[in-house]
Image 1 (tube, rainbow, N blue to C red):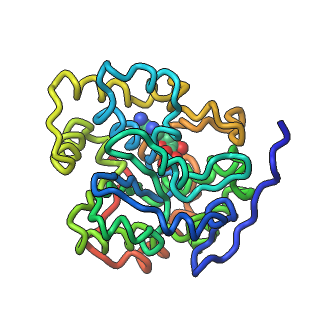
Image 2: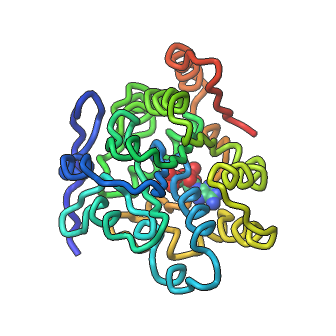
Length: 294
Ligand code: A3P
């Protein structure tokens, strides 16, 4: 199958985007939520798939839905709201047609772009943040392997653009801060960190369950912990994105490393110093702290 050319980035209301996330804009903005819908919101490469699968197993992991787990890839179980790629159903249409309750929906939108219905219906939202350095590295490799994303260029060019917010979905700094601010007024927003999940999965699962009002048995929690382990998700065709044609996993696997601290294998000393200096200027809120190692 011939792949369409890689898209280019352009400024969209102050945020760098590609046509694959803006072409269905008006329809997507009019998405009608239900009060029990759950939105999983992240900056790209912060652990969206991991947390999507955790939620999917929490709600639909019981042995009564084996077909779901054997034959429906995670990106169909948890549709990507704003995506619109020619000859594929849009994320919004997929979300509209989800047969399950609750509906689990994924977005990378900065908070100001989220369809208003999510706020009107006071839906639960799970936000996942990841430290900027590992997030940038993961994004670089993702753009290398995914033809539906613009060319990343070499690492130093990409890192510069990441710092300037000239990557798809815009500035990491604005994204994590914007969602953090929203947490102050939208009580049904659970803000998680990738690093915390790596550090203590059980603790984070308990805290997520308490936000969702769920109380799974110890056995169920064990099943979720095992199913969502990096190596198991990497082997699982329904969670490793091996069914997606635009991704060339020979260039870099979607389930790449799954670690905190891989940035140390990419940043030069000079890049790290420049990054830290710029970071201090942009990240002024002392309450919002990311860890670059655990
Ligand atoms: P790396 O590229 O650093 O390995 P997203 O789902 O938002 O696109 O994020 C993808 C990143 O999350 C990748 O990071 C991927 O390996 C990591 N990831 C996915 N599942 C994971 C898991 N179960 N445990 C740890 N990391 C995971």
